[in-house]
Image (cartoon, rainbow over all chains, first blue to last red; front, side):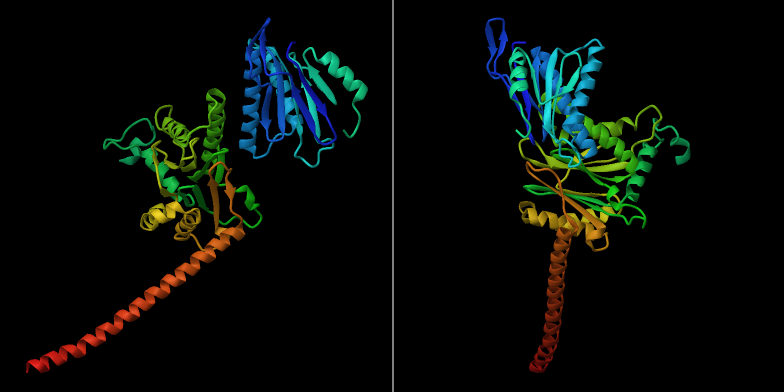
Length: 157
Length: 271
């Protein structure tokens, strides 16, 4: 909850932001180079926050599977497809021995020209619930970010 | 004698041979030719493009494939077996990245593929994979590599190699033609690969497919225009060579006619 991640969708871009590069353990800062942003493909990335080990394990696992798809099929998955794959993995792992305590945001720009909306942004929580929205956030900042987004987000940013 | 011992591939023949493996190697010899050349800063793969049926979409015939961003593979032999092997290799490439945070070295993935091929020559009564592969790429430290595997599961590193139909002829040509200058130049390496293929394939960009990989860049398949340019250059060089040889032969002919008169003069002197 202490770690914050925010995603904002514009007309033809998505903006992904994370808070400071620290991992806390109670009142102590354990790590100063924490990177919560994981590249899934050339045009899609994932922000993940939550249990430190789970975050890295889950995000890297999803990332490598997206790469594998690219190698086998020769094309990149759209952010929509990446998000659905992520959600599926989250939901499957929840109903098994190894679940991940990680909240993620998947966002990117689809390379498929036929897509209606090419800037795609999704939020998936640790229970496998996925929503698509213009402003998404996880952590304590969500109380502020979502409220500000409701008030100030507009079309064609 | 061969018939008795090749039904169960786990068994050696009395003279120490694995016939199923040898038969698989025969299947490889029937496949279309593939050539690999390793230069200092480039690796080149060339394959013979077999003529497709009139109604067939020829872009679906892919003999050169990427295994990862920095590894590519060409094969000769059973296409279906190659598809299975490629799939396993691609998974292994990503798995390796996930577990150790490093891309595979070319030797690692070659060894993985070779191990897979070997597994099917031992036990469970399954037939071996009927293909040989040429695996090219750049290691993490930038070293270019070319490896080759065969149905028995052995692999070797090469400077240049050919597999498939008439591989022996092509390899002999490569042995004669491969020089240090070619190794140093990317342009010459590509030309050597095309030359080697043209030894056994009809000239023309529609009969060959060439793919090149340069350090830190993904595999690039040359367009038919680019291939045509190389072929034109090669044909020009061949013409110049042929001219030179013809001239040398002519010059050699005139020297023999001048020696005969001098011989007769000597004899008259003696007298």
